[in-house]
Length: 390
Ligand SMILES: *[C@@H]1O[C@H](CO)[C@@H](O)[C@H](O)[C@H]1NC(C)=O
Ligand SMILES: *[C@@H]1O[C@H](CO)[C@@H](O)[C@H](O)[C@H]1NC(C)=O
Ligand SMILES: *[C@@H]1O[C@H](CO)[C@@H](O)[C@H](O)[C@H]1NC(C)=O
Image (tube, rainbow, N blue to C red; front, side, top):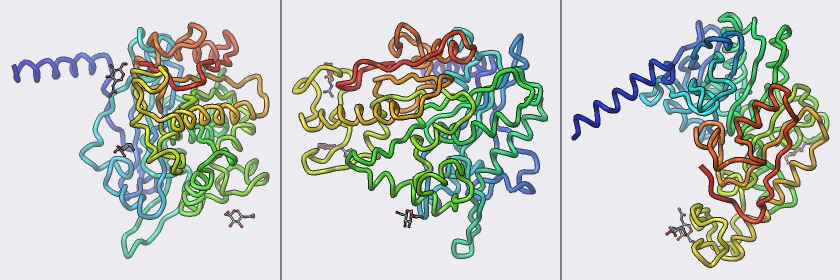
């Protein structure tokens, strides 16, 4: 039995390899000279699967996510998955969802050149500084990682791209918003350059409980990584620089067409970036039974009525932030009530039947928007509670 299981896994891996699904790590050339290095000083890298067929001149660049760090949480990342490339866990990457080379999963982008840029700087590919931590050199070089990787990809053929798409999830979704115009400027001859930010819209929501914590969270990142002169002037000239990682102050100034893909009840934000007042009784999301949602309490969710109200209010506040953005006809929107964080990686969410809006999967909606087949502005109308998807 054991042998068969191992064999089956090896076979799946082999087939996947043939189809280009398992993609090795490529370290950036001369990374040390360029200071394109991770927090622990190891060279940064990416995973690249070449395009084929009529996709050879199209490029998609995916920015990996993984939260942010400041102070000791950055030191903890040294030698880890999110702070270096030397760790045993950093091996080949399996491409799925928007990076899949399987046409049935990823009909719009399957044969494009597909790149997954590893996140190992802790500040959404922005910082450019170093620190001496008691004699130990610690690097925060996200902006050099981004620009060195882009240089290398341009040389590999991205400079001839006809179509290009910058995307990413979570901290990489926020990085997509922040690097979108820069990405476009690298490709002056391309026919079409656009960006898709997946789950990168982290709200400040200054009037919603927990704002102080959310503000402090990003202020610490901005201070620690010294992002003052790196964050967009369009934001820092308008509001206090310490607020310029909140998408609500950034999206309006992005010139390149940008698609916001986000869960309304973003499970990461609901769970970690929300307050814990007494009436929520030790709030955490474990009371949410996603298989039962949207069945109202008391069964079979174990959330108390105040907890359910809190979740509902979060959703309303999130949508207020989206609806408060300056109008822009080129912007795409897909706001789902699925209780998730990150929607582009899972095949089932990306192009499956349960995360549709107006009968379109996420893949179809983004394809229609990307190729100008139709504008997409879709907001789930199930706004009382998250729903089960995937
Ligand atoms: C920006 O906000 C920080 C933190 O709240 C505060 O200390 C600082 O004085 C503010 N800067 C300006 C220019 O208002
Ligand atoms: C979540 O909250 C419940 C109810 O207060 C508690 O029993 C449980 O231990 C908490 N779980 C975690 C992971 O904190
Ligand atoms: C969640 O809800 C489903 C469907 O109603 C139910 O079968 C399951 O037992 C519930 N799970 C928990 C942990 O309560």
